[in-house]
Length: 337
Image 1 (tube, rainbow, N blue to C red):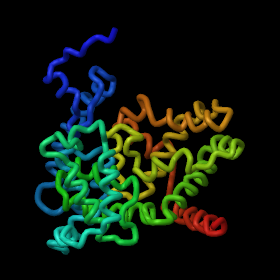
Image 2 (cartoon, rainbow, N blue to C red):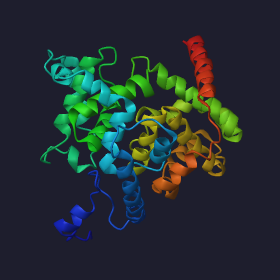
Image 3 (tube, rainbow, N blue to C red):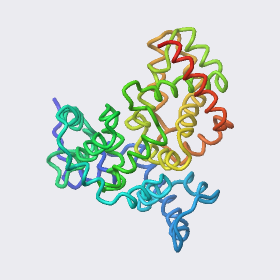
Image 4 (cartoon, rainbow, N blue to C red):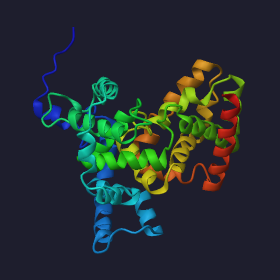
């Protein structure tokens, strides 16, 4: 017989984190978050001093601060500044409003409506019963972007990315400009009709694994496992719903400042750190299951420790190498088409 849940409303509220996601009560993650808050409190003091006076400029100090984590109260400001989204918004006043006033594109609207109802079912801020709910702002951001970029319109996965931006900024227009910056600069052609950017970067990861973790690359080739089968969601959702929320936000802190090589650092760290476990797999389904398992557990729950590892575990990863591998991968994909 199932035991009734007599927990109070107060206890239920306590299980919702600061981003609106429901957490299991008494989980290890809760203890890690508590420890991490103490780290963030110390970081907040340093950030407050850094942001006093002149506008934030790119520097080794800023890069170091971002790698160590942006306190949530400054995250929206820093993302907007370092991504260039703030400048775009200031140079285009009323543009977002005009996009929402454009004639309705029925196909675009229907695609978005279908997907937003499936966005973060475990987040109280994305429920129609919540007041205010993020569902209408999310709809607006995606419609505005579809009107802004007719080539892409709307693509599955964009709802989760825009949803995270709303969680951080709590502002439609800022979320729109950050989404534009991400898609234009950091993951170009990920969401295009051909998704050529996504396919290329998955192939680049395959090349990097051959260089950095050759035994895993050999296993993948031996069992004919295509990289797209195990990492496409990592890339297209930028690790949303793959890794814990605080870890994803820490990754995005660096992504907005350092660009797409951060996604390769995260992926390589997961693969290299769990190499021994992955190599236990001896068939196609087992390999796919291992790639699900390596995105869970203590390594990724400890966002502070994990972020330190992504800058040490994979070793050097020059942009020139990534650019060359993109060129090679793009040519290979062209030959296959």
